[in-house]
Image (tube, rainbow, N blue to C red; front, side, top):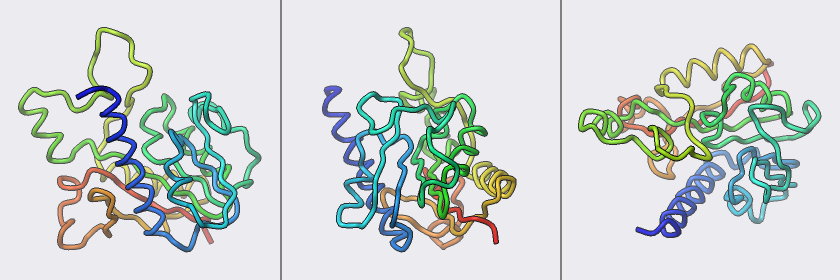
Length: 208
């Protein structure tokens, strides 16, 4: 399969995920939305028809605002109604600082997705001696991007809860993604989310 074909498939999946997340939390999308790690702005497409002011942030020069989450976001504290980071934090060197930046810039909601590296399919690939994905491993050529953190869904939940509290935020809702569909953690089909679910989705709001 050609690289272009893979990029089209990945982009289609990212758009499906963004659409699923917008539909999961239909009440939060208003005012200013800062999409950190915007890639090709799938969230903006998913928000089509919503009354929002969208700003896409990425290290790629084509973004509306070029910035590195692991360094600093060039926005005032509490300046955005909603801040999103879909599959972004695991790419940063300083995960904890990146999370604090999301909380600093947001005023009403933070929406984050994180990968579950302990999913059953990943474990099987380990057992078979197969690479997990292009974002891990040790290629001969220096990659432009990679995952820098390897954690389970349980670890992600604990981190978001504890670090959110430290920065004045609390978990308003948390789910897992099965494809583009979001399901509440604990339902019958997600009895073992650490094994069966690839992505953790969490909505944060200010404490109190």
